[in-house]
Image (cartoon, rainbow, N blue to C red; front, top):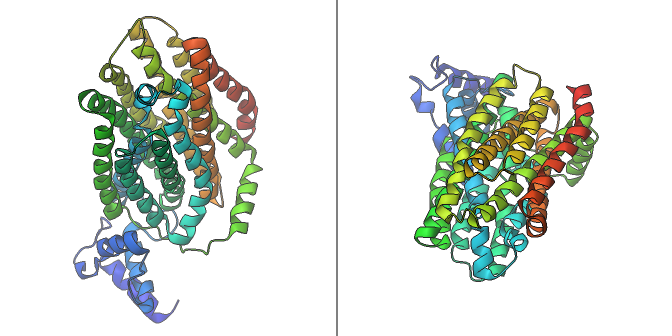
Length: 458
């Protein structure tokens, strides 16, 4: 390291106070400007080449230079957690705002329940595939830049969806939305595992997934209520505008990644993915991801059909109140994230899957309160399983963390796409018992297949 580089680094360090924020040397506090510019145009692109090193040092001093140095209790940690909560909210609210609208699509466009799930299934399906590339692209373009672009584009596409004409146009927009949304989830997991101190990863991941839960709940409930009041188009347009505002918050508050960029190499992507596919523990976690998410989406896709029909005959607004149980999911994710660092992860994953199966079986009862209780138990189990499994992937993968995370989320959203549509056939042919049978069967198979592998690798 040359003398000028060392001098700049020391000046940056002297300008910090004990809390990790810029103190008397506030003249050097250029990180918000740099973050804003990098979020729009690529990190430090607007500055002369000779200035890049010194500015990078100053930004890194605030977030904590070195791998995994954003520690719990620091201002950078708080900003990162809140930014990812907003990102999780936008991800789930724009991806799943169409879920309570499946019966509405079936009526308005004259399609079957299975086909009415296509706006959701095509988005999760294309998202799963694009996610394999998004994480590697983020290593070349920058983690924060890719996530920011994904949030802004999905927000704009949500607004465009509100003005779509015809069912094919709606599906086409949702397909594109799935492609651009891929830039957030896998990259988010990689960012957290790279930038957070190891002791802070699980809790940060828990709040991010908690944002998913709150976003999913808000999107589903408010979409249904606004659809009853006005129309589903007004509902989607409103969420598009809200998501744009939260995307701006994310861009301005997330500390930039400190890792150097690398050129995009397809060979590196292919070999790293193949390497992860030979890891028994990761394969087990991918199986958990596929079936847990597939079961989760299947239940929520078709519980609306059941409650809208006889003997319940509830309105869209009343059915949407079922999604209030997402609050339990948010709490469950937070508790599971804290527990993962203190208890055996294998036991937590297995227990969470069993809780999901028990909740699904409870929904077979006829009384509405018991059905709601079953959905609540099921939701808590899902978010616990997802939190523990996803953080385990980041901790276990010693190299190519982004690709390991991408494969986890590839399985996650592929399960959503496949099971979410197949569940429609089970609903049409066998009713709710068929849907529950599909869910419990998937979870039981996952328990049998992964139990031994997780035990050996835990």
